[in-house]
Length: 201
Ligand SMILES: [Zn+2]
Picture 1 (cartoon, protein in one colour):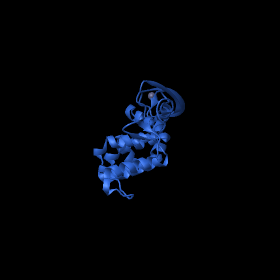
Picture 2 (cartoon, protein in one colour):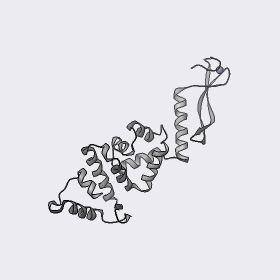
Picture 3 (cartoon, protein in one colour):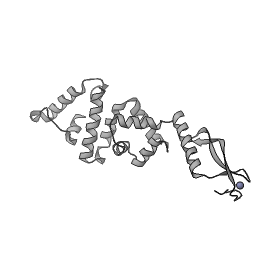
Picture 4 (cartoon, protein in one colour):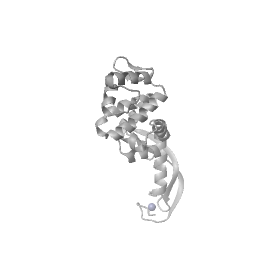
């Protein structure tokens, strides 16, 4: 590795404390960095600098953002794949992967979405419905089923047109709404489809 400052190839590694500014916040991180033996300038070292950058992200997320493991836990509680959650959030799959690995910091919009989901997990359904047109029927049904299962298993409130969020017997409410929608055609056996979903939720 070569020094950009004096072109010397004689370098060494030492622990170095450095301030980084991320989104207006100062993050101080101590890490191993490479230096020039001749002029003492910092020398670019891909491996060490990547580790440093990861430490900076971790520290920022711990202080001001959202932790990668919280995002993974969030996704797994819904039993959603990377593909499925990234679609709901509206980001690329590789972006979500980088959030979960901690190699990048969620942008403000995504941070707000994650934080909202952490404090009120059932709003995932609202996110899904808000962007309904971007799914195929098959994708939509698969995700909807997982979300309903999550909401039902955790006995979370659902949104009704009259009272906003309330805790109630979701299965009962659901059945009643399906009954209302399907009328004579109602049976206990049903499958989710976009039209039914639209009427119910
Ligand atoms: Zn140098």
